[in-house]
Amino acid sequence: MVEKVYKTMKSVGALNLVTGILLIIGGIAAGVIVIINGAKLLSDKSDLTF
Image (tube, rainbow, N blue to C red):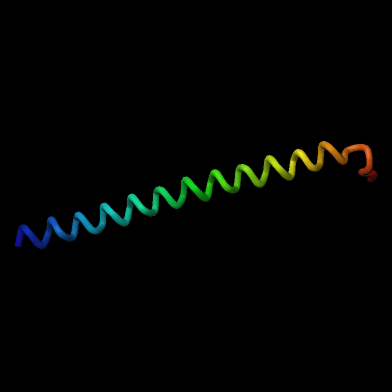
């Protein structure tokens, strides 16, 4: 019985670790995209008219 609990906890812990890593990678990727788009807006600032 105790071994089954430890196996369950091990798989849940591994899944949480993978989820955390994916969220960190996704956050970094989103940040880079936002910075690149901001740089494009700054470089084309003189061409923008409202």
